[in-house]
Structures are given as structure tokens and as C-alpha cells.
Image (spheres, rainbow, N blue to C red):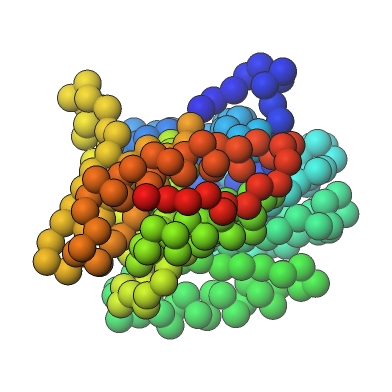
Length: 320
């Protein structure tokens, strides 16, 4: 998924990943985009200056991810000599805060300096703040501490709007945050959701989820029935990503899975060249073979949707 040949770059989105040294930026990037597991991130060293990654997502969408080292010397350079280079044409700023930092005032100073540079060079950029390492906070204190930080960050961010997430590399919160961020970068996401809804209704599914193939981030979903667990998407992303990594260690490739009990059947299968699909069915009269055929029949249509420069399509085909 890493591209270095400019000829293959399509619609590029520049994403700045910033924050103080040791806040956890490179660890989360490695888990989401480089298939690390949480315990292996301890081997990662500090980022020196700026590390560039070109990650291809759906169709022609390429995330041009800049992981910016957070040592004081580098941070000062970003705001002075490198200001125009770093902050020009930015689509998204992701700023990571270590929730247990002992230098909160300095953290906020650097964050505000980032916002000033963004306002000057990329005023339309979206801003996300990740309050990270929340696993280190006592569980009964997490809601209160996050709410206080969120209020402070929103106030400091004005006139820019800021979306905050609590995150940890040890649970599904990391996937929730990054799925939400990437979702806002997909240019045809509304069209994708419309077609996903049509697909779910045609095959009489309770719920359909679309995952990006490499990262297993949720990029679109549609549900016909209310579900009890509001965090199920991120949990599934985390579980399946770990299972895929386990398969690769055994020189096996993960392609599909069916889980069935007396209440529902869940199907996870390769969908397009860039996605997996998950279909949840609760009607016991619909056999597995019929659902798998419907998934196969929809693949060609959704492949067309991923061609961002192609004509618009609407899913009206008949499914078995």
C-alpha cells in the first residue's frame, strides 16, 4: 500500500500528525498503517524530523501522511524555517496529546502555534485532537478527564473547529478515532453509503459494514436494526486485524469468515480490490449460499464506485 511512484498518485490528501515527542504518534501510525501489534511498538525509536508515508486507500485516494518528530528543536523549526513547507495544502491536522504529560502548558503552546500556522496556510483544514494513552488513567476518572481536556481544546482551537477523541493503542478506541478521520477524507462517501444502504435492503441484511482492506478501518456502514453495542465497529476492526496478522505469521492469507449462532449469521469477505465487507443476517430462512452469491454479485458494482473519476452509479441490480 505504500507508493513512491508519482505516476500512480491520484487524489492526494496531506495529513499532518503532530504532537510532543513520546506522545505516541508513531506507535499509532504503525498499528493502523504498518500492521504492528501494540506490544511491538515498544521497539520504535523517536521520529527524526518528518517521516513521509504515502498510503493508498480507496481507488485513487492517497493519504500523504507526515509524521512530524516532536522534539523541541524540530517543533520550533516547523513554526519558523519550515513553516510554509509543513503547513501548506494540509487537509487534516491530527494533534496527539499524552494525557499524563507533565508539560501541559508547553503542549498547549505548541498546539496553538500549529493552529496559527494552519490558519495562515491551510484555513480549510480539519483539526482532530487525540487525547492519548487513556489506558494509564484510572477507569473511573477517564470520562471526567477527557471531558475537561476536550473543553479546553475546543476553546483554544477557536475560530477553528476541533474534534476530540480519547485513544489508547491497547483497545478499540484507536480504530474509532482513525476510522472517523479517514471517513471525512473519502470524496464519494455519501454515494458509497447510498449504495451500501440499497445493497443491505435488497439482500434483507440487518447491517452491512465496509472496511478498508489493509487497515480494516470502517469507512461506511448501514444498519436496518438497532444494535446494543455502540462500539462494535471498532471492536470488530481490532479483532479481525489481529486475526489477519496471526494468519500472516503462519504464511496464510485471510479471505473470508462466517460466524453463525441461533440469533444471527455474520459474513466477512473480500469485496473490492480495496475493501472487505461484513454482512449481518438474522433471518434463518436465508441460506448462507444465497448471501455469499449476493456479495459476489455486488462486487463489480462497488468496484466502479471506487473509481473516483468515473461516472456515478446507483445500485438497482437484482440480487438472488
